[in-house]
Amino acid sequence: MICELLPTSYARHLSLPLLGSVLDDFDDWLVAQGYRFGTRQCYVLRCTAIEAYFHKRRQRSFATLTRESLRKCWRYFRQRPGGVSGTVGCLLRFLQSRRMLAPNPPAEMPFDASVAAYLRHLTEVRGLSPITIEQHAHTACQLLRFQIDSDSAFRLADLTQTHIERFIIYAGSRFGRGTLQHVAAQVRGFLRFLALRGEISPGLDRQIDTPRAYRLQYLPRVLPWETVSALLESIDRRCPGGLRDYVIFLLIATYGLRGCDVASLRLDDVDWHAGEIHINQSKTRHPLNLPLTDPVAAALIAYLQEARPHTACREIFMSVVAPILPIRRQAVGYAFRFRVGQSGLAIPFRGVHCLRHSYATHLLREGIPLKTIGDLLGHRSTESTCVYLRLDLEELREVALPLPASAIQEAMS
Image 1: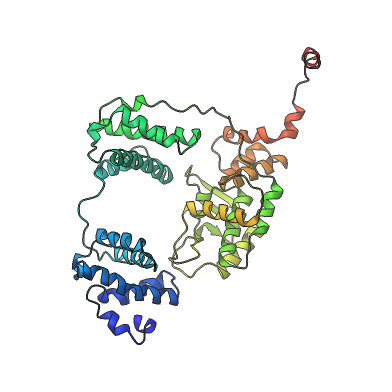
Image 2 (image 1 turned 90 degrees about the vertical axis):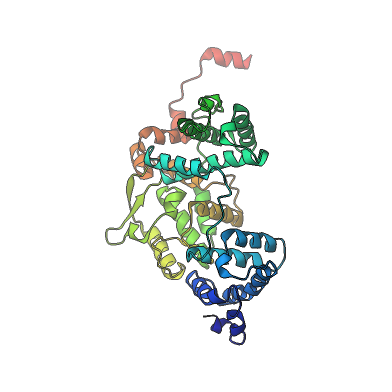
């Protein structure tokens, strides 16, 4: 209730013609999202500036408020000091969650129906995982936006090999060969689907030349195990964010989990009585049961008791600042880069996946059988685990063949 936030002026705010009727509900929503008292007070006060913005534009009825009008308001305040744009964005999320906004005008993106049909195809026909579908959708939208930015009158029927080549060149300026290979494959899949629907000319998918990326060209990105331990020890566990990040990276370093699997962990996945953690692998969609070690259990308990926000969400790892929501897989990578910067360690890699590679290599050097390592990592075939054999230099030295005498003489001459 805003009467607690603004005991002397709450009546004036509740009488605002446009937003006054929703301010109490807005404040209750802010409380549920984990916003603190001072932030809630600031957001409610800023609503007077938002009200003035719409008043100048003769928009005084709540029934006419749309997502697009709020986005225009956000763009207006984004160019001005005062932080009002953040309040507009928060107000927009609140109104969307309550379904209180008038319907938008026709979609800005003219190809929404084609993209939506493609996503249904990937889900229902090809049965791809949610993460893979998200990547395909991102590439398809990038391809179409690139064409619209170049020509606002662009239509799918106009798509030619030249349009596709320009997009691939643009993507090549931003990504390495490995990523560009994935982008090219995703573009091909989208073009094949559009051709099946008769929206573009057939055969365009065969006009894309895949960048050359040779198998086993690069070694896995691995850190010395001492560096992994030093990174964990460098995390400040006196604050909620440090406790959370420590548990996240300890899980990856202990079990070799993927960042997406850690982010999706739920309270029900930890079986305290049986001493197990149940992992639903996002990549392979195969369940994985792992023993709950004492250090991991102690770190999890410390986080759950001291740092995890009070929320009805069942996901284990939540955001530290409001809005309090389950973290997404990208947040694990952001946290890794932040903690690496804070640690001062010489870690050349930006992706958290290097911890998974480091764990596998550490086990291999400890003499753990390759099959066991593959089972712990959730690999479906031994071939996926064999790439780490290239990093065991001591074992490789033992199988090296002697250099022929002729080659020695030739090198010395």
